[in-house]
Length: 520
Image (cartoon, rainbow, N blue to C red; front, top):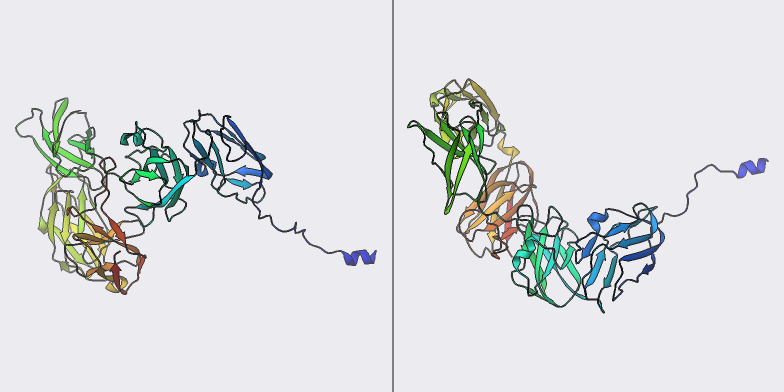
């Protein structure tokens, strides 16, 4: 008995080495790469229990089917079954790419990028093309991005991308944007890339980004293709106006509206006046009028360049808006920043003597005031010193609005930091092949932090940069309008070219960076 006790050891059974081998296919019915396919069911048997993970996201069927096949198991099984619900096209090669959706039940080992391929004709199409997708405005394209081919048959036209699914599809493999379309048949095709919101393989300009090759491509081809994604700017379109207050109507719109004007067509009293300002965040013009009208409706003519709309809005009994003033940006100001106040009703005048800026030692700082009528801001300019606190005080009557109402006593507090808490960047540009260009520094969310417009080559200097990581890019402003312009698919207009500095730039406090940007 004592000898048996001595032999015993406490512990937990190890269970042997961990299974790292993915599932293995034992048999497929019909066999993979089958020709003259006529059935509607496929069975793929494995040597162990498998399950399907993220199938809706991973599975790519090319050509896409109108009715999604039923694919099981829903839980676990040794057999993967595909039941086809669509009528298959004749003489067509179909590819089911399962991505990383097939895993074993116990350890989750992935059977990566398994393809089941069959043809309804007498042979398997085996041609392929490859390339890369870029994003016009981002360092790397979002993944996954769909790449698609439309066969250029006799009935093909560009408008099909808005209503019909493509002939072949695939997705980009990773953030490098590389793609490969396989099992293609010989012919001419339109090559597109879509970053979709609905994942329906149909281009919806309101939501999707698109990239394209201008000319039809021929398959087979030895070329490697490059597609640049961009979001189209929609054509100008006036939305239905809405009454937001007793004397306030909002005119929303889509697209660019650089010359939008509003003219009242209805009969109104002689003392009727109106004013307009633009919403700082939304594509909306705010139309204000006085006095309040007893009429049931107002009719307007809204003009933007050569586009004219006539619209009627029914008036409701709403409350009159009262003046409300707030800071556009409070807290920390940089030395070159302007302090701005926004109002909900149109500002028409100010009394500079009733607006005071006071430093933390209670000394008065000379300030000048200006009204920004475009966005309805009161802008307060004053010299700032580093590591200082300021109080902006508005006495009653400092600002007066369109309805002759003025503010009560208001106070806003801001402060500045030491210059040593910021960094600077000096940039030398090499191989710029044309001007003008826009040089932009953007944060990790692609918000523009600082920019400079260049008509000729010179050193660019950015100062007062908060410690952070930034992207640096230049825009070739080919139409010389001071902004980046997107493209248009139907017109085959590509977006203006943006080139990123090859690495992210880290700015630290009290650092001065000197960088050379050599363009390729």
